Length: 93
Image 1 (spheres, helix red, strand yellow):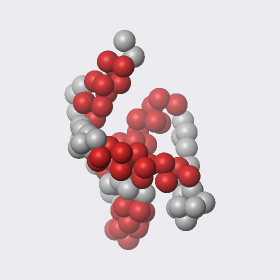
Image 2 (spheres, helix red, strand yellow; image 1 turned 30 degrees about the horizontal axis):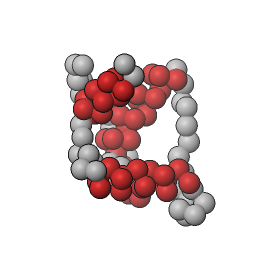
Image 3 (cartoon, rainbow, N blue to C red; image 1 turned 90 degrees about the horizontal axis):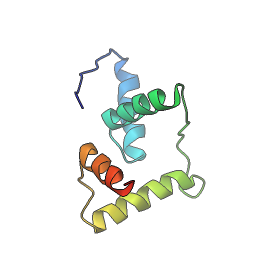
Image 4 (cartoon, one colour; image 1 turned 90 degrees about the vertical axis):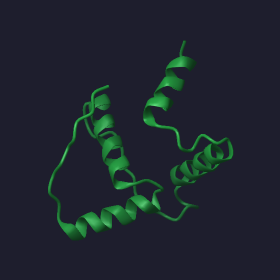
């Protein structure tokens, strides 16, 4: 898969707030932007909404944290996207 650099300008204060929100969601801003772009293409539109709520009110965030904890326990938390995709492809055979 060829990689391309995507750049755009954003308001500095908005960027800082976006980084803080992403960190609370357990991801980086670049990871979030890659996820958005991939899903936009797959769904041919904006397919989701993510909002910060207390963990007791947001089962999605709790599930992501559990998945991260399980990945760390199994030593697979540092897998690259290519490695993840390869495992998915292998499981689908």
